[in-house]
Amino acid sequence: MTDQQALWDARYAAEDYLFGTAPNDYLASQAHRLAPGQRALAVGDGEGRNAVWLARQGLDVTLVDISPVGLEKARRLAQAQGCRIETIAADLTRWDWPLDRYDLAVEIFVHVPVADRQAIHRAMAACLKPGGLALVEAFQKRQADRPSGGLRTAPLLYDAVALSEDFATLETLELLEGTVLLAEGSKHRGPAQVVRYLGRRI
Image (cartoon, rainbow, N blue to C red; front, side, top):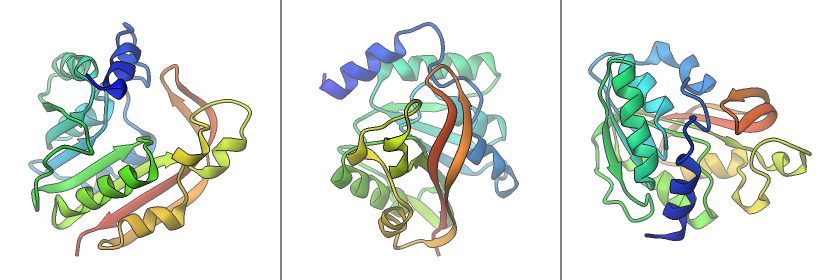
C-alpha cells in the first residue's frame, strides 16, 4: 500500500461522503452534451459522486481511483441510486490507460505534482475517442491566498495556461477561471478560486 492510498483510505473511512453525493456543478452544467450509451471515465472520483451521476444519465461509467475504501462507497452509492458503475483501484500514474475508448473523461479536484498531472492529462486526452470530451475542474493558484476552504498547497494548484498546455492535442471548448461557491460535502464549502476546462478530441 502506498502512502497516498493509505491517506485516502483513512479519509474515506468516515461514514459520510466527504464531498457529498451530488455531482460537481460544472459537470452537471454540461448535461446537454451527454447521451445515453456513451462511455465515460471518472478519473480520481473517490467516493463516486460524479461517476454515479453520469451512470444515472445513462452512460456506461468506469471509475478509477487509488482508494479501495472510496470505491466501495462508490459502489454502495450506485446501488442506492439504482445504477451500476465499474470500479478500478489503481494509481493514475501507473495505470495502463486504454486508448481511443471513451466519449468523456472527467477529473474533478484531482491535485498531484506537476509531472504527474501532465502525464495524467496526456493519458486522459489519448483515452478519448475522436469527438470525445475531457472535463476538468480544479483549484486555481489564487486559492493559495484564501484564508479558508479547499486545497492551499501552491505547487499542486492549477492555472488556465498550464491546463490548456496539458491538453494541447485537444480543441479547447471552454477555459474559465474565477470564483465559485462550493457546497460539496463537508470538505468543499464556501467561496473558492477554480479553473474549469472542457476540450474535445478532434
